[in-house]
Image 1 (spheres, rainbow, N blue to C red):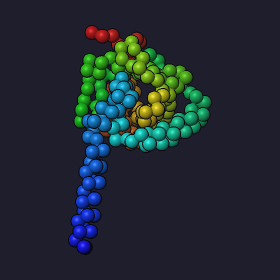
Image 2 (tube, helix red, strand yellow):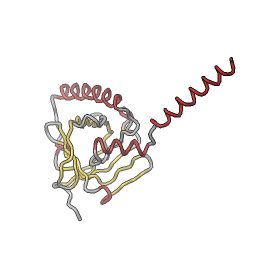
Image 3 (cartoon, rainbow, N blue to C red):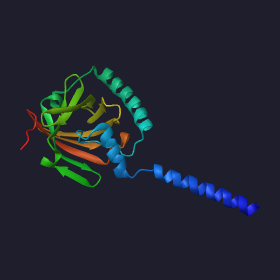
Image 4 (cartoon, helix red, strand yellow):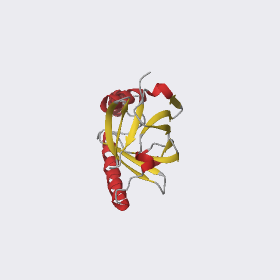
Length: 189
């Protein structure tokens, strides 16, 4: 009787374990699900390791931080950030690098009212709110799409070139990008 009980428990555990394995998704499957949910127009998409509940919690905390920082600064915008359009010239994520034309004309446009737009070529594909702290050289981005997690980057700026390096706050320390200032949207070649 004891052996049958142990065998029964072992079989139940095996069956439950097998069912749980079917629910686990591979990183590429997870990336595809995220791409379907939030699209792929945003060049800095980096949320494969987040669950939906985590994204909601991160967004709530980030919105609180954003509102506090905006209030403390008097909603101050910097011309160096909001002048013209920033076009992605290169993006590094983990060990993958995408440059130039491979980025498909992706851009981001920071506005004076501390909002931003992004898209491809002349098509706007998303919006959000941002705060740039010039003293600390940090940029906080919160997309209007509630399926996207917030992001924070360390900013390195030189005239018409902007480099953003992901910060660990929202697990973006595996990516960075180089952007170039342009007066108009990129055009298809």
